[in-house]
Image (tube, rainbow, N blue to C red; front, side, top):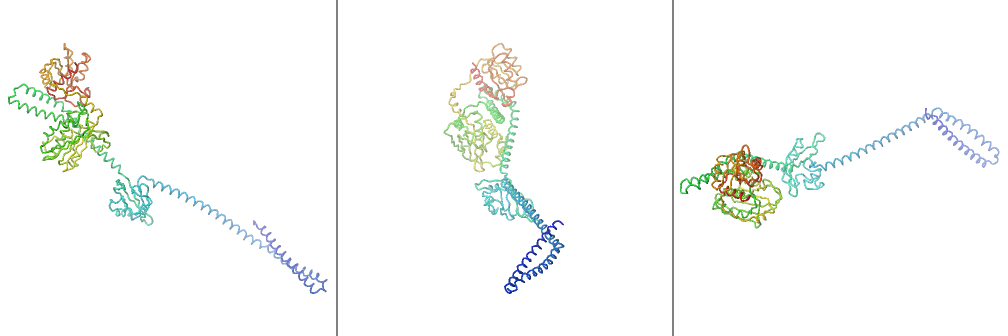
Amino acid sequence: MKGFSHIRWTGRIAVSRYSMALITLWLVVSAMIALTAHRVYPAESPWIPLAFLGVFLALGVTTYSAFRWMLQDVENGFGMEWGKREHAVHLERDSLRLDLEQERIRVRDVTEKLKNASLQTRRLHSVFSQLSHPVAFLDLFGEILDLNTSASDLFGENTRRLRGQSLFALPAFAQAGDLRPLLEKAARGEAVQFQQELFRQNGESHTLVLSLKAVFGEKERAELIILEGQDITERLKAEAALQETFQQFQQSQKMEAVGRLAGGIAHDFNNLLTSILGFSHMALEEIPQDLDAVDDLKEVILAATRAQNLTQKLLAISRKELFNSRPVDLNQLVRDMNKLIRVTIHENIEIVNELSPEFCTIMADVTSLEQVILNLAVNARDAMPRSGRLYIRTGIEDIQNTAGILPEPAPGKYVVFSIRDTGCGMDEEVLDHIFEPFFTTKEAGQGTGLGLSTVYAIMKQYQGGIQIWSEPGVGTDFKLYFPYHEYAEQMLLDLPKDVRRPPEKGKETILLVEDEDGVRRMASKMIESLGYTLLAASDGEEGVRVAEAHDGKIDLIITDVVMPNLSGPEMIDRLRISLGHIPHLYVSGFTMDKLVEHGADDSMENLIRKPYSREDLARRIRQTLDGNA
């Protein structure tokens, strides 16, 4: 057995040491006895050493025999038992050392896990705090246990101050309903989601979709409730803007549909009106004024003029460009139209002009601008059937926020024209449809529904806008925004004074090309009545043949734009090759986009729009001939 020899050896040493100690003690005791005997019996001194030696030998033999037996006992068994105990002690010590080492390893592992758990907790809390949407932990009674930064920003308080407060006591939920039933519903494990408008301390409102979800612990009991929100304010704004854009798109589609309808019928309708008005005016000039037919002709002219105005309204919706734009002083135009507006509206309506002292000069077509103002004045008149006031204002404004202005113009400087009445006003439903073509609140036969849609179309062509305020029983205010032109005022001042003179006749040669028989006959009669030499053709191909076959000089060509086989601009280009440059005037009843499709210049300064009168034709002929002289 390992370690037994060592144990036996140590046992021997222990017995030997013990024996030596006894022998030493025995010698000391023997010596003390001998000394005492020597003092007591000095006469027996020679015998004392012999007695000491005898006692020493007797005790030595006895001690030797006893300790020899003890040594033999150690050799036979005592040492083995001791070795076993010593070995057990070593084993237990080694076991304790191993257990201690394992415990140190477990403590190290637990410490490392605690560190990792703490780091993970800090990371999770950092992520929780930085979530973009608000999240809060509530107890079952609505008290805030914890919340992230988004929630504290929404609630308008510091995160530490909010912990421990009741959700229902927060100013953000001041206008919210009772949420306790929803908390109870969530605590039962039911899904809860609702939309709520919350208000910050600065009064700013936010619309959120809130959800409540319970966290369950032991015995399936709800321990806390998670409040999670999603801010949908911007989404609602985007949806509203999209809806508004969609409505504008629908409005644009309706306008475009009406424009296509107008463009489709305009040509034929204007040809008919041109013939009716032209022949009627010439007949009125030729017959004696005392005949009964004069009144009849005047009625025909009046009816045709009304039809002409209706056609112009339809065309205004579809035109891409306005004609004859020039500098116009809006203040002066309002003053000039006062008499016309006064005649148009009722006498019991008071007109109040509040015109700006500044020059409100814009680039506009006077005819279309007068049409806009007159349409708004008539609309205001119908809103005040008994009495009221009509305020007309002008001014200049720098507009940065164009919300609510249709069609939405670009931010910038605008000349503003406002016309406000104190009439019956309009509700939201009417305002939503007010610019739709053919929409009217008037009784059947009392309105075409094209007045405001025409205003809308003209303002769109000006790249301006319209803003409407109206309240039932209070009145309506239309504000028109015209783009400000920096040099329009100076251009207006540089214009020469109007020195118009009556149209003069002439003796030049004019080539008339018109595919509509009635219009060609009417125009031919007008031109010949003015003294000019006339060449006529029914289309572009014939116009080329007539011009090239003519021996003399052709001073002016008057041609329709849209014709079969060869359009007016194409005919002019072909003649320019063979005959050189010839002054020309275009005539058409089509819309501008249709004319551009057939090769016309989109400016079309040399265009006469159908229907036209004899005076208009005579003036334009003379201006063109004199300008090219």
